[in-house]
Image (cartoon, rainbow, N blue to C red; front, side, top):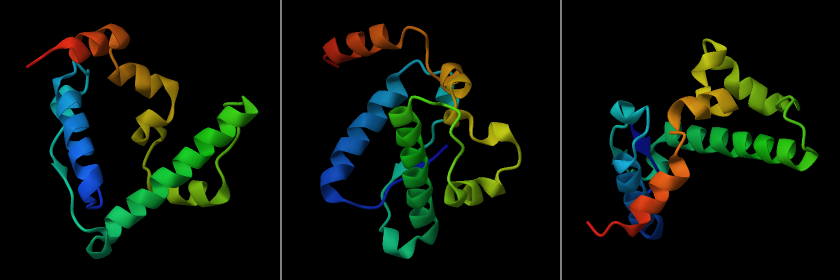
Length: 119
């Protein structure tokens, strides 16, 4: 999985640092992590579409959190944006099961150890 973010000089350093830390984490999906790139978004329509999708997913997650109800259906716009997925499992990070598959059980301990490393 490759990561592409719209170029932003201030964000690039932070994102690169965070991505490098993520590559050192013992994630169960470690072998799927690819590269990080920062193209200019105006020339990359797919990047703009991805930004919109992430925004819609975030809004939906916030709506569910505010209502304390995980069963709130997505908005019509988000539903339409997700119609291209082949099977429900195409969006594994959209639910708790997918997160549990990717994140190690001892994540808090791992993050503490990484924060104290000096390499």
